[in-house]
Length: 127
Image 1 (tube, rainbow, N blue to C red):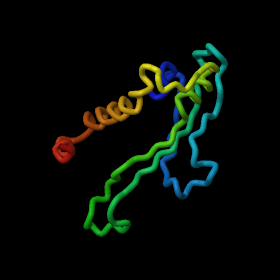
Image 2 (cartoon, rainbow, N blue to C red):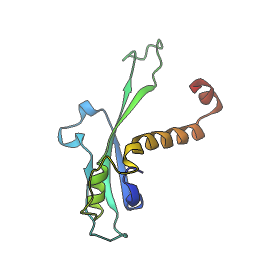
Image 3 (tube, helix red, strand yellow):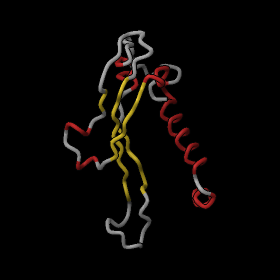
Image 4 (tube, helix red, strand yellow):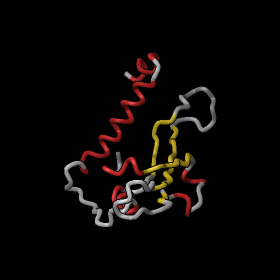
């Protein structure tokens, strides 16, 4: 979704880790290769980084929930992905018709997926 029309050309691997423990070089998302213009058979390989934040006890004492309260993700920009896919004219334009809503759409899609996968008890707790 993030990359627009080239989503089918992207294969991503996510590194799930604590941002603090990563080395400076590995704290950033990576685009591992580039494709030639108009080569729809080429796949752009990327690496994203995810990290959960937890509130409450750092020690599992049972006094507070141990589930993550927030998930942070670092990923390549839409412009960088399009350039890597061979669109050398890709621009970063906040006035594009869908650019203003892309984050909201990604969050909604993630929420919809989670709601479909959740147990009835989890859904009850969420409401």
